[in-house]
Length: 207
Image (cartoon, rainbow, N blue to C red):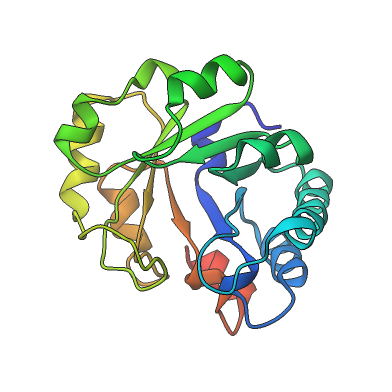
């Protein structure tokens, strides 16, 4: 796994089968070929796989990441982290506490979504490796997404924590990705911008 979290966050692709109109494995292979730097398996929500089918897809996606030498992160599923030997786990504010996760996974990457100053105050930053900041822009991919917090949230976090790895999330497209980086993020995380792209190679390059 790459040493630099900042570098790995640069083009961070998040996907589950529910986000795809064709084979997710083929989409990830194309995205990796195009230059994504990390991948998060997020099999969640309407039309997502469960049980054995979810694990099987996870194994295939895990293999793609391993072959490419990029981090394979699981979204909020401790059991899957063990089953797939993931490199890390990403959780939201209402998921398992990152302090518990750090005790369980002393050597894996832990990412935490933080949207507000209040959440920031209540988040044990010493237990995490990076912040998922957002949603920066309005997003339609997640039905339970919070209100957009804007680029200012990235700038605020960067001023307070000059060295903490930050990835922007939420509503990021090839057209607005540069503004997220300019605001101070180490990278951008996207779902639809790659999963639904007509030309994945071009989309990744524009991010």
